[in-house]
Amino acid sequence: MRFQMRNEPEEGASAKMEISTKKEKDVMYVQVKEDIDLYNAPFFKQTVQDYIKQGERKFLINLSDVS
Image (cartoon, rainbow, N blue to C red; front, side, top):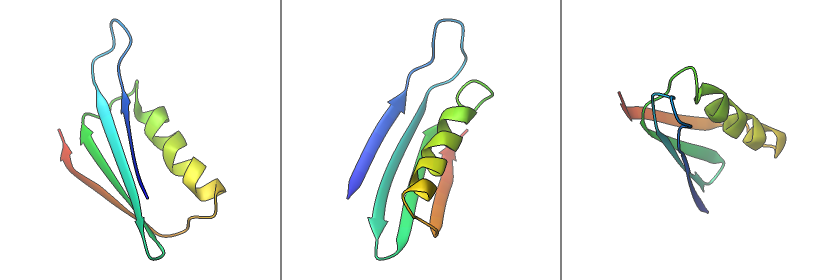
């Protein structure tokens, strides 16, 4: 399963963020691109929490494309 979403900032906000996820075996892979800032950090947190609520327990979060 692959999932991709993009968080576009509201006017006056500073950063865009793109999150892609895929599950392989029992690991949820989360790829974050562009920026995480005070505006969109709650969006990232909610995404991970939603997967935890669905029963996911193992994550590999790749932040190598975050500036």
